[in-house]
Image 1 (tube, rainbow over the protein chains, first blue to last red):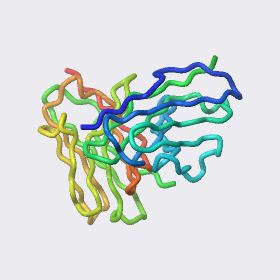
Image 2: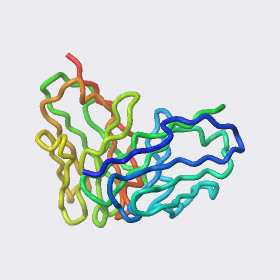
Image 3: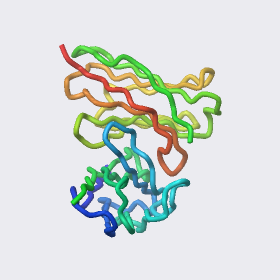
Image 4: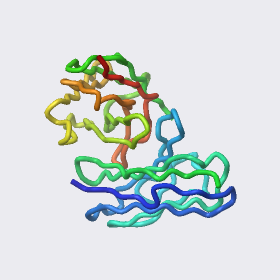
Length: 107
Length: 116
C-alpha cells in the first residue's frame, strides 16, 4: 500500500501570507494526486487534480506542483476563507490513500 | 457542481450492519467512479472502497472482510454495507463521484454512531 505523509501537520499564518504544504508518497505515483480543502462540518472540496490542474471555480491563488513522490500545494495570498484543513489523496494505486491532513489556522 | 444524495441509519449497535445508499438524480450513473470514504470524529479521511463504471470494485484491505459495495444501475444508486460494527466504526461516511482524477462531487455525509 502507498503511504501518504504531509508536512506540516498544522500551520499558523496571517491573511496575505504565502503558504506551502507538502505531500509525500511512499512510492512513485506519477501525477495521480489531488488536493482537498475541508472546513468544519462540511464535505471535502477538491482544489487541484492531476497534481497541478486547478479545479473549475477554485481561485487562482491556489496552485499545485510535483510529480512522482513529492507534491506541494501553494496558496499565494491567504484569504480569511482559506483557513481549513487540507488533505492530499493519491489515486494511482489501490487502495487509495489520503494524507493525514494539514490544519491551517489564523495567526 | 452536482451533489450526490446519501441516506441511511445513523445510530447502530455493536455487531449490527451499517447500510448507506447514494444517488445522483437526473444524471447518468455510468462513466464515473463511485467511492465511499469515512472520517472518525476529529480525525482524517479514510478511503473505504470504490466501484468504477465497468463494475469493478476495490476495497481497502483493512475493511475488506466486512464491507460490501454494490450498485443498482436501474436506480442510479450505489450502496455500502459494513458488518460487525464496533465503536471504532463511528464516523461521518461520505459517498463521492469522480472520474479518473479521483473523487470530485461529494455527498453531504452521514454521521453513523455505533453505541450500545
